[in-house]
Length: 318
Image (cartoon, rainbow, N blue to C red; front, side):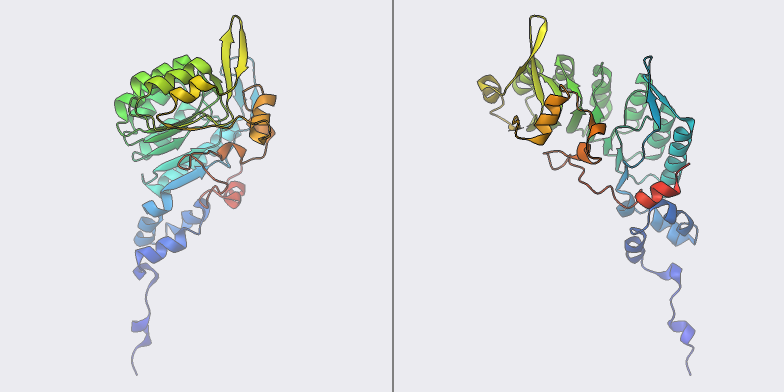
């Protein structure tokens, strides 16, 4: 009688593509001990197909707003938890993350940002957390380490020039930008001068100055898609800022590109923008509201993925 043991396959003899399909059903915490079973499993746990996108949008800081810079106080336990999660993710992914998504209410520090930039050199897309505790030097160093960056979603910033300049110098394939907040002439001129190859720009749900919009429409020559849906368009008249509708001058200037527009008080999102006076209070609304975009490549959808799911959120709490 033959030896039946010869017909049995060992776990570490399984095909890599089969293991990848299995491991994609696990979250980060579950994958930790799995990666320690054998060398093959460790290698497979870091497969780029598993780590193409890691969505940390369930991860938020426990914070209090303050009146002095950086205008936010964050519980020390939040910072420590963020470091624990980042260390686990970076150790498992082994540099294979190409897209990273953070919640707008995650108040990261330079130390956190530096940690992930050193361990995700192939990053192509970043959805930024809040700026408050990230310094000019911190974000500039991060951008220098991401030469493959193609797409950035970021909150508005008072002095955007240094960010745009760093992208221009170090991210030669950069073509896609989304701004969440206020967009003025300083921002528009920075983009026109330093990102001449930008193809997609989304300003949805932003407080948008009309002269900044016209500057983009006339001078951003390679811009193919501009999303100004649900924007509050303002024009300075004397000392006042007056709300404007999309008029003939805007439509004519934007005729050479695809301009996505929604200015309709029958639209719930437009109503919210008007009620919030052009500065969307995302925290007032349903949790996934901030993730949407009319531009398909920028839309994050409703599903934040398996790697950091609800169960993983509970397992990493404090």
